[in-house]
Image 1 (cartoon, rainbow, N blue to C red):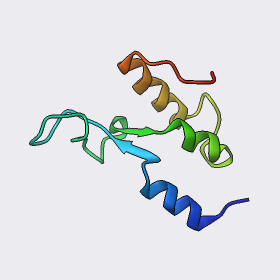
Image 2: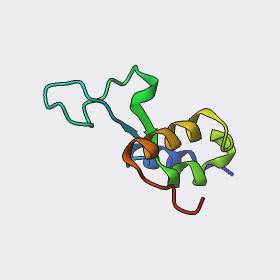
Image 3: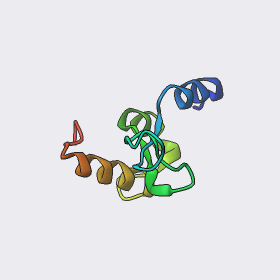
Image 4: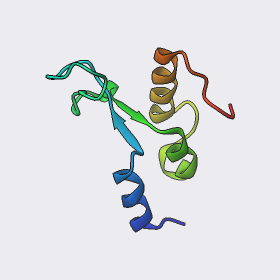
Length: 78
């Protein structure tokens, strides 16, 4: 059910994005990795690994909804 190599490839290819407003370049990619709010899991990752990340009310989906709300975006397919 879980291909560990594929999971590692997905994690290295943008499954989780660290956002923020601190750092020398002052853009959204200058997030602080120790701040939980800096992390945005990608919707494709949550759908693919639903059996690991939990459901709509769990922490990772709450983070996705928060980041999409900040940007005024709608989560596709929901």
